[in-house]
Amino acid sequence: MKAWVVRFASLLVFNVVVLLLIGWLTPARVGWSALWAGIVLTALVLWVKPLVAKMFRGLAEPKSRPRGKFMEWLVGLAVTAGVAVVVWVVTVLLSGVQVGNWFWGYILPPLILMIGWGVYSLIDDKLETQAGAIYDKATGKDAAPVAAPETTSPAPSKDHYDGLTAEQRRMLDDLRT
Image (cartoon, rainbow, N blue to C red; front, top):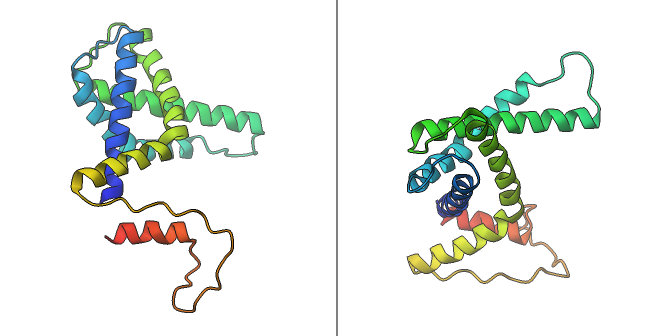
């Protein structure tokens, strides 16, 4: 549960910042609607975006012959752009964001969303770690200290060896609590 709360909260903060940037860089009027639109956008990114991306990838599957590397990259970019447009349109429909004209309101904001998704994918681990520390502090739990990576691998005991690394075992233990 903690992992989902932390992920939702960190993505929400990031999405609100991206929405404010969209409101500042485009004629789309975001304003105070950024808070509700951020919640809608976060929910869409977490639960709807993977489904729409899977559907678009299924439509883009090569039917006869394989594509080259560059064409695969272009198809992947087109799928991501299509997903961004769908997510943006649904966000506009379900929130108080107002869009002025067609190009600046429905084409440019999805491009900004795609850039935002790229930036978030680069910093999400650090952001979620910091949000997790804030969550632990707010709930009164002490954050587990991060252990330095082991340089020597101890001999696995028969009881404890399950094929997981120490970090994976800690993550699994966090999920169980």
